[in-house]
Image 1 (tube, rainbow, N blue to C red):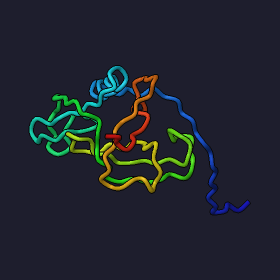
Image 2: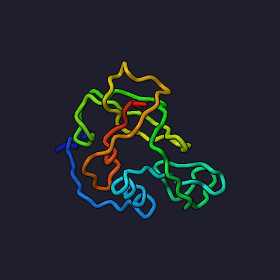
Image 3: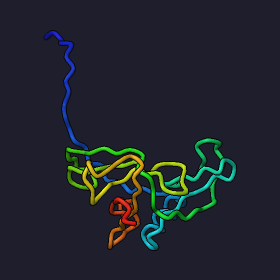
Length: 151
């Protein structure tokens, strides 16, 4: 029997359950969301960059960071997109809006859901505020979404 040069491709969906450790820094961030409805950033002692979400090491100078900063939660919309398809990994059913938000007092953007708005309501530079879930569990989605600031 002659061997054929044929490549077979099979589509398969793998589901791999696992537990993820957020670590000490991200855990503190998530606990502040859950327990106090506060958004915390972390500031580099050398560069003075404030990261949200927080991280252990500065991405610019590689300094270890431990200076926490409480942010108001208000922020400026840097960019956004409308997602018109659904995937099992999406936090909500399509269509929905995702935005990059630069919180006041932070130097990095936070990507999150935008709610209570239609695409035509949004403009780059719009001021947004967080809306928290009533029941919070220590997850980034404890912030239900950001909406256009009401004041």
